[in-house]
Image (tube, rainbow, N blue to C red; front, side, top):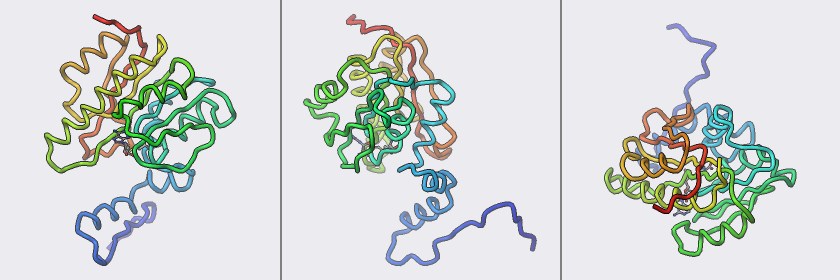
Length: 228
Ligand SMILES: C[S@@+](CC[C@H](N)C(=O)[O-])C[C@H]1O[C@@H](n2cnc3c(N)ncnc32)[C@H](O)[C@@H]1O
């Protein structure tokens, strides 16, 4: 038998210890995921942080002193990245985050612990933002039911609500990045985004698991609200 010394050994969770098979498989994957290890090393709260890092490196979403809204922010990886890149950690710019789940504070980030679909949420976010946004991010995902169509509808409803909010708060030239599911942005959402933004594309960053239907829609160059 030959061993490849350049490759780290694969960790396998040995016993089920009262875990379901799904839990064991999840744990196996976490323990062998290079992004999980990197996030731990570099102090990010989620492996998702690397999706945003890659997209900002490629598309230059953030500018120093910019204003950012992070919808569905917990546990906070994206907010950490945004705070670093606009300089909110050093008192510049502004990052406003919202999640149904509570999350520990992040320096330079204002966190609302609220359902984004609550009628009060948009106004509360706007008040915290204190002016138009440069970037609206949404990594919101409702808990999966396992029923494909239901999950699809739920995530698309969140994406539609996020897009509507983005149109209300973005400055001309601003960007909107939103999680969707493969095949899910056809139709009204995509048509609306194409009307209001100069460039709209689908992106799948390397840290987004290949076997997941997750995809991001990136709309750049906000034109202005068209009330038509
Ligand atoms: C994939 S996680 C976000 C991970 C985050 N981007 C990070 O880097 O740490 C999705 C989040 O969306 C939140 N979420 C789902 N529906 C929501 C809603 N209606 N309002 C606010 N947050 C919501 C969930 O609670 C969950 O924390």
